Amino acid sequence: MQLKIGIACYPTIGGSGIVASELGKLLAKKGHCIHFFSSSVPFRLGRVYPNIFFHEVEVNQYAVFRYPPYDLTLASKMADIINREQLDVLHVHYAVPHAICAYLAKQISGKDVKIVTTLHGTDITVLGYDPSLSNVIRFGIENSDRVTAVSHDLKRQTQELLKTDFPIETVHNFVDEKTYYKRTDSRLKCDYHIKQNEKTVVHISNFRKVKRVTDVIYIFKEIAERIQAKLLLVGDGPDLSTVSHLVDELGLRNNVLFLGKQENVAEILSISDLLLLPSEKESFGLVLLEAMACKVPVIATAVGGIPEVVVHNETGFLSQIGDIESMARYAIRLLTDEALHKTFSENAYSRVHSHFHSEIIVNEYEKIYHDILNK
Ligand code: GMT
Image 1 (cartoon, rainbow, N blue to C red):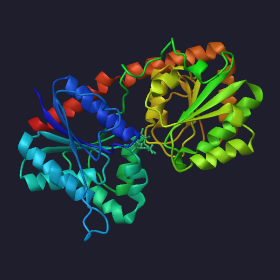
Image 2 (image 1 turned 90 degrees about the vertical axis):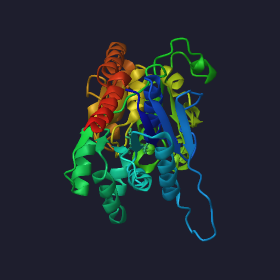
Image 3 (image 1 turned 180 degrees about the horizontal axis):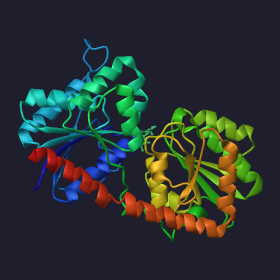
Image 4 (image 1 turned 30 degrees about the vertical axis):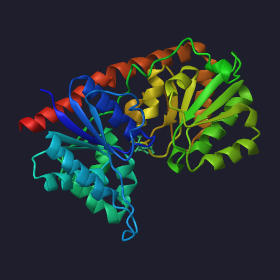
């Protein structure tokens, strides 16, 4: 049965927006009608799809408002589209404000549209600690028809932190295999003037404090003292200037390339030998999956949902938060042992395909939609 599904997400570069837009595209490919609600076209939506519609949430700045009411505009837009297009399901990504907006839109429309809320991480692990928001988040969760979390760990944290026994099911993230695969004919290494015998280490993030990008630099320092290597830093964010100063302070300027925000991440991963993600919080770590799909082994911290993605000593290595020495040791081992690197690359790729294949995950979401509609 073809469904009419509204998807709300944040459009900025970040895992939740990527997952929401990829999910929408794949559901559209399966014949469903997808209506996106966001403040701008979600990152990576790219070209025109005949059964994908985009509803821009445009906030008007009236003098009476100190803060423009994005939430109310979103709810009102959702209500209009529920009525005009007869939406079956609203699938909102990120609890605040989207789950609450969906509830409000349902009330305004007077229709029995079903609400699915997907929790992505910081909506719980950061905002959930704010007493002024925790009641609102709990309300959004408990008034959804179904709630999913991107890892078992996030599910556990949500239930503990918000003191709710509302059922939450884990639906892991996925990557689109048609985008994320290893390119073998890339000239990028040459273009970046990286020598063939040099190893390439990569870090990709939004450079927020939780990502601990300065740890990446310290780990890389240890690597560069023993191996000819370059570090690619992809992304932008609040910690970028601190990181840049540290690179200079440690005398690494000639070994580190700051690439800024990049869309074609799979090309960059295709020339990378190792990805580092030493985060202190990570409900899933979508970038780990992106790397593994491109046959890049990873070294990360054993926090949040990461151990559900990375199998220690098989697809990469896991260390404790801030344990630079152990992460550097693992990195040097992987970059100097060719056979081990090859085994880990293949294991990483196989794990993505057996556990996080887009078809498996999209089917899980589809089943959720059908279950709540048939109730
Ligand atoms: O990592 C971020 O800071 C961005 C954030 C987001 O909202 O996109 O990422 C969260 O959702 C991603 C997609 O489900 C997860 O892969 C990230 O692990 C999660 N970030 C955190 O938990 C810090």
